[in-house]
Image (cartoon, rainbow, N blue to C red; front, side):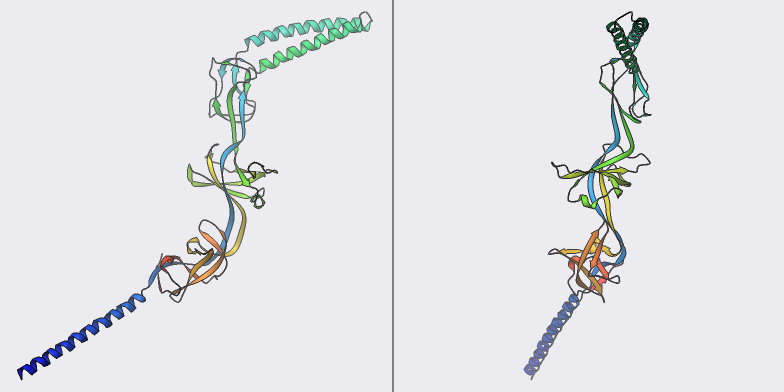
Length: 350
């Protein structure tokens, strides 16, 4: 009897163990089902309407509209310097003076000789009218007078050149002489630059030149002033294509009222050549590229669905949608990497 009771107890324990094991297996299945139904966190944005511009982008080194190397037209010792680098000057302003003592003496001598020949010519002209001298003597006197007049005027001109003047208005950007220096004819003594306006010169591939026209707006940035964007516009387009490079020269006038830009700065230029108004657009982050096709994930009823779209213009933040979406659609902008078609999602407020 005791033996029979022991067998019954063992049997009950075995049944309980098996039942418990089955219960654990069923619990695991439920966990798997919960895992399959895990919501994927994403961030979304709504399709919006607006305007997107198309840009031609390029780089250019800034240059001045006018930049003149001032040279000495006569030789001489520098007697006085009237300007320094950074000074603004007007056209014709005296920048420096050379020693003109020798030319002054030459001018006095030349003037005296001219007056003597002038009086001599007057006497011979009177005699010629009375037929007292030949035509040859008269013409020789006239020739000598005219030659001396030209020589006198040349000395006077050279004496005026001892005052070195600016050929353009602008700012003195270089000074190459000091007081006491001996300057030779045609030696460079100053550099004058006119920064108004400042120019950005682009060399545009000929296949792109059809997009550009005089008057189009341009935006410009420089590395030295990363927080500032400067406005400009196309001022002129060269009528020829450089056969060596296949490019066309495009000159942009820059608006720099505060004088922050300097010639020689490296710049990045964006020229707006077209604008699409009142179009559908989405953030750039929403677009996925697969096999040369543009895709987005559209949110519907707490699920996402892959949709093909056709895109147009693009700017720094948004992209134009030509087809595939409507104004009421919501698209995924973060978390697409872990999404599949018809996946359940959890939208995170951003």
